[in-house]
Length: 489
Image (cartoon, rainbow, N blue to C red; front, side):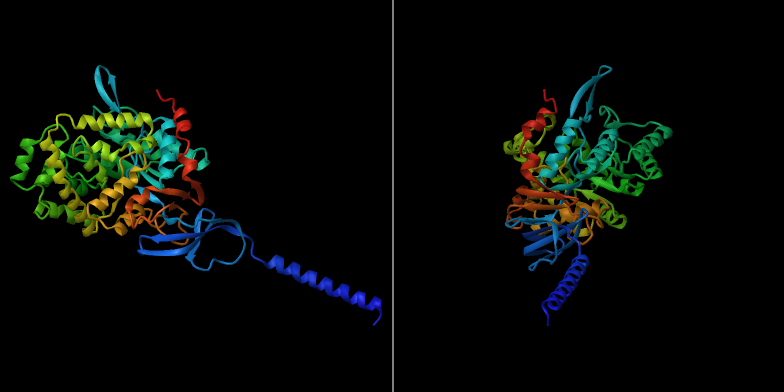
């Protein structure tokens, strides 16, 4: 063979090889989204722990996950998260993320309690909630204009924070007032308020303790007429009657209506009850969970699928003056905006005015019945979730989990309620709250295993929301600068 023929043949072979290689490259799958690996995956629903786990995120959603051998192919991003424990993002079903601090204003010569929103405080709340692993919040009442603005700013990326479903202005008579409160008095006013909140994108219509039964019924009807879900924090009207009227969600482990107490205990409670916070423990001292009235309540809740958020730290807070330091220890207070903290401490302290050592002893003893009530709800199959009644989680979400464990809930169940349980309460069980392909990529990465010590749920290293990963330090490491933007007085 001549040199020319050999070179021609070689060139032809090379051309064929290049063509084949080009075809192979063009046939190769394009790089996928992000691959996170090396962590320990904790699944509260399946109650499994998998080491050396991995997660693929595409377009803000879970595309695949597993453990052991990682998937083949190219990825736009790879990140090693070894040494961390990953769970679905936490869900606070009672977080007032857009509400401002409690304050007392004088209007027309009368004191009015307000919690008007402040954009800078809301932004602070959002960052702190996310920093501690809360990726979804049910906001049960605030100025609806502020809540609508929150959604716009989160969607645009101007603010960083959890996804939120909101109730608008709380429906309550004076002395509550301000932009976060409304009090319709006529059928037309009820309709107008519900229409206003629905137009602003609210999901819930919150009915409060000072309403009569007739007003509660009017509020439920107005909410339903405009596609809002009626939820309620009640006192005088019993939970049983509220559910019969159509309330879909009940707030706090405080079913403190006299109508739920059996004869004898009911009359005694009416005679003793004053205007202060003692009524909370006094009710739990007298309740008979096996009596016909409470048994009827449990049956009605189950039959209707009515949801309950527990907020046990509210009950715990009402166990004496020293509870303030136990629920809000000094090391956690930096994560509450200073103005919000000042209002919170003032109101909590005022609620303890006049308490004696005997009140404290009895209130602490009554916590056993509070815990039993929570277990009765859970055992019956009532949808319950984890709530803080704070500005959207923060370190106090873990406080709520600690109180639940103290009350006899096993850690697996607590973590399930903090994730999938919250999604169920909010109607998001097909979107978030668990490890599942196609679900929102909302994940919290902890520095330690919360199954060994539930307080580890506070030790957040990274949190992912809609597939975007943030470090705790980026979110919460510059508290001073964030507070400065709020024009703290």
